[in-house]
Amino acid sequence: MTTAERLTLHAGTTIPVPDEPAHERAWFGMVAAFAGSMAFLLLIPAGWARLDRLWAEDGAVFTVQARLHPLPHNLFEPYGGYLHTAPRLVAEVAALLPIEWTAAVFALTAAALRALVALIAFAGSRACIESTPLRFALAALVIVLPVGNSEPLNNMANLHWFLLFGTFWALVWRNAPSVPVASFVFLTALSSPLAFVLLPIALVRMFLPRREVPIAFIVGLVVQAVVMALSTRTAYSQDQADPVQVLLASLLRVPVAAFTGSEKLGDFYPAMGNSVIVAALVVALVPMAAGVRFGNRATRTLIVTSAVLSVVVIVVCLVLNWALVMQVQQPGVVLAGQRYSVAPCLFLFTAILAGLDRTPAPAWGRAVVAGSRYVVGLLVVVSVFWFLQETTPVLRGVPWDESVANARLACAEGSGNARLEQAPEDWAFTVPCDELG
Image (cartoon, rainbow, N blue to C red):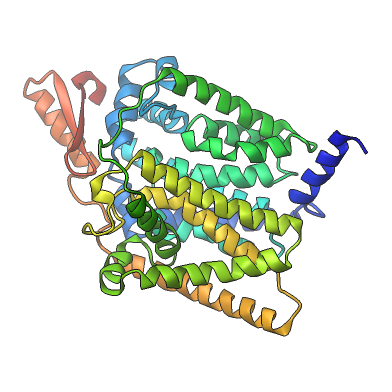
């Protein structure tokens, strides 16, 4: 057997292909799941508020530049040192419509793409996680996970955290529809600098048939790398990262926040201290250890890879964007930069659910894994319930239609430019009055 043949055989057992394609009836379930996901994201209190609130860079960067500059300039214009192709494309569409629709266009598109990520996770995990209920739980977490439903909810500026997770499963999904999935991973590579952490998976996929998806992803990474090499990035802060604080913040933002949500963690950590970290690690590590012990090569690889990605993403995000406000003794504990928890928590749950999927032979092992399923499930359900009681994620301030009306009034009084207020507080941007229609 040649070296190439050995590598192909090894890659095939590491990233298996489903035994049979999904049944045609599954498409009806997919459509229902997509509609349900959209309804949840848009109609929960926090989601409803975002239909008439434009968030941060969606307005002050992408919208204003789409209205003032031509499409080619915007698509290749870096912001923060990298390309943001997905939100810029949405901004270009919004710029063709009445300006009153801008906030809704961003919210609806972000919700739709996030629902698509959930479907990709469900379909792509079929060969790695045999249990349909566990695959459904993984897909549902993309939608209901509390850390994803405050700061990152229904805005394109923070969607790339979900796109990263979807691309992970798109690369693992060996019998995926080539053209749409290749387009998806290409778009992710052009929208997130963190997509480089998935390069090893794409390289492994290159040894297997149907290489269109990894090739599209790698091409996107090359374009992103060139732009990043030619760009400059202004750091959010000049504060130096403290290794101890980064470690504590990482543990709180991922294993703990995954089970409690970011908002509720602000109550638990000051009262209970580091004991919440120990408890969360135990709940997470028991099923992961069982999966590594009793699973096959594909299961062990999935657990280890997901766990490593979870650690790498959260540590890189915190080190590169560290500010004193992220110290764990600060009010809110982990609410600053809440978006950094999204992809790491989803990768962590991937490792946990992959472990729960493999029921070990010994009776004690079956009891441990069965108990872990109930504990993990209960914690997630309770955290979602807690989150839905929170009022802080609901955006306040000037609604978008009121902001547009105020800007039109200023133009009618003789101003040549219109100032449009948006969320969060103190964010706004200015466009010529002609742009108001």
